[in-house]
Image 1 (cartoon, rainbow, N blue to C red):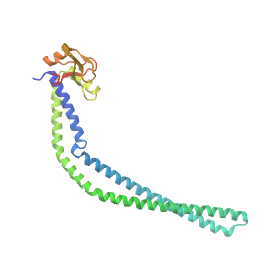
Image 2 (cartoon, helix red, strand yellow):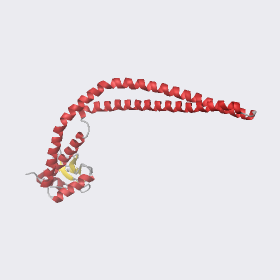
Image 3 (cartoon, one colour):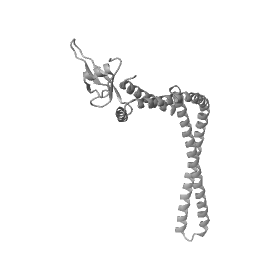
Image 4 (cartoon, rainbow, N blue to C red):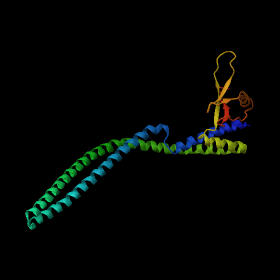
Length: 248
């Protein structure tokens, strides 16, 4: 029968495994991460070009609509020329006509610039889309392979989840409550390895520290962990201490 320290150690390992498996199932495995990043980058590039196309088309429509309005104004002003009664009104009307003509010229330039921008973005989009086809095919095949692997990983995750439940049931409630509290406080790590500080000299005493917070650990605590498998807490961070094999 495992000691309480052994149960707690395995519980920590199982919880870490469960978190890793959950992250894997909701993400991308390492073997296709590079392909995924490349695919995402190329896809974002195409989407950005699509946005540029839409923006250029909108700018062109806006410029053409404004030009049409100005043309209507110009026509109306020109129709008013025969109705002017004096030189002052004539001069003011000619100024309005010149202003509208300048606006029409600006709109024509804006529409032309938008058209050129649209054509340039369209060319880049078409080239990027054509180059993306092979990458997209490889990515789809990798996704199919990953989807085929997921059931086995999900089964592993379920087995670890069941083991966690069994371990929690095997531990005394007070120990489990403390473990959970420290586990949450330290972001998923309730355990800390006891580390020996290397000393020089023939009569150098053994000095031990908590591997997490570096607080000094009593030699008697190390003996209890080594010989009895006792549950010993760090006096500072309250993590459950264990002795790494190398230190042992």
